[in-house]
Amino acid sequence: MKTDSSTAIVQPGGRPASTPLAGAATPIDLARWMIWPAVLFTIVFFVVPLITMVLVSFWVRSGGTLVPDWTVQNYVKFFTRDYLLIALRNSIEVTLLTTALSVLLAYPLAYILAFHVPERWQKIVLILAVLPFWTSYVVRSYSWLLVIGDNGILNKLLLDLGLISEPLRLAYTRSATVLGFVHFFVMLLTLTIYANLIQISPSYLKAAQDLGASTIRVIWHVILPLSLPGIAVGAFLTFVITIGDYVTPQILGGNTEVLMPQAIMLQIVRTADLPMAATLSLVLMTFVMGVYLIFQRYLKMDRV
Amino acid sequence: MRRLLLEVPAWVLLFAMLSFIYLPVVVLVLFSFQGSDLPVPPFDGPSLEWYRRVLANDRLISSLGNSLIVGVASSAVATLLGFLAAYSMFRMAPKAAGLVRVLLIAPVTVANLIVGLGLLIVFNLAGLGRSLVAVGIGHVVINLPLCYAIIYSQFGDQLRNLDNAAHDLGAGDLATMSRVIAPVLIAPIVAAFCVSFTLSWDEFIIAMLLSRFDVTLPVMIFELMRAGLTPEVNAAGTIVFAISIFTAVIAALTMLLKQRRDS
Image (cartoon, rainbow over the protein chains, first blue to last red):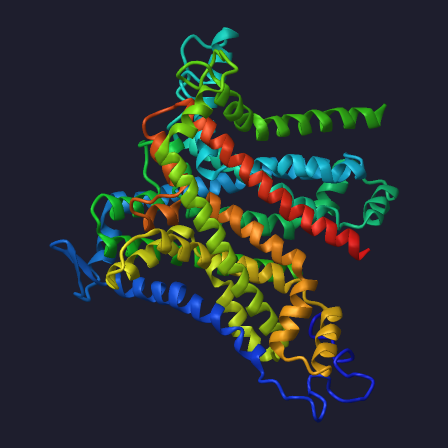
């Protein structure tokens, strides 16, 4: 779109418009330089820290300071310590579970929104469905504790109904962590999937129905394949954010198990071992990047 | 009849999902008005006691101040840099722009925890240590890509003509940018600032890693939560929620008004 402006930049005089008129003061081409503040900022405060992190991951912490030892012992430690490998496995399991459940719950919601809710109500219901997005991210996990805690609303309700005789242990478990994540990502995925669904031309659905397809078959053979890009984008976002999140497992998961971000924070806060924290972060980043590459290829194949 | 059979489950499901989404929010807000010491049933309110305590809690209030300062300052910087970069990119030859675009967008692909850890290590090695300024820098890093993307997406052919007209009339880049482009793009600029502010306002892990004594509100609330469940956190959380919604609504209204004006 933006590159296709060749017609626009030639003005009636037939002269490239960006050349100033003869006689007008020739301005210095400042625009060329305006990119630099952002570029320099990103290099200094993003690229340099990442490179430093890679270097520091080969250092060791000794006597309270960082020593440039140039050793791979941190990486060896990661691959030989059970609890670190388990942290990665836990992270992957929780993330996959979160992503799958979020898609399964968000899809019907987005579908109903796009095809059952009258058009003029759609925007309002959609806004309503994503409003809690703006609850504070720390407080959102805490709020779930109030719902599922031992003396929380859910246990209270089940006790009062006589369905259980003592409170269910719901908080501070992996399920609680997944619940907290799913709650957040259902909102996000509803947005991305809905945006995809409303782009599907109604004539496709009409055609399928006219050819005698049942509602289920229309969904399975027409709507679902056409909405895969929206699912993929949302699922990937879910994956990336979930696997790097510290707060939700820390508040809702309690001390039952450690996920990667928690393992990283333990290295920073508990033992001040920044080289080990850097190593774990890089392992996590590499993993996410690998998943991204696989995802990207899948997305391209999907489009062909 | 058949249609009704399909519609009823759809509406039940819609209602169930909305209930699920709203359950924790309702519980949070409801028990911020709790009369007793625990934010769990039975509800014996309404009482404003916990809001009074939040307002009387000096550390909470100063952390709220810190969050506002960091949010406004980092969003202003991110919006300014994002706008300059977007305008520059708009004027640049497309082929030079590719690599720069990747660089500018890259920080969103990395977890905040890793952005924060990288900065922590660099600041430590440089002997700068942790501070509110460090937190602000971290927030600019994560918000700059968004500000740039939001503003850049609004540059179109119409602006190309305006830009050329201004230059033809002899205006330099600076004058064109500040007197022609910026006023036209005021809506996305305000929206970028607001989105950036809500993200900074809510950000936890970078603030946790890079602040020392002058913590931000999310870090302060996290500290409060360690003491267990208390309606004070509910009240503070409700206030945070209200301010976020307020900012988000301003962003949405700005864009909506612009759309209406355009059409």
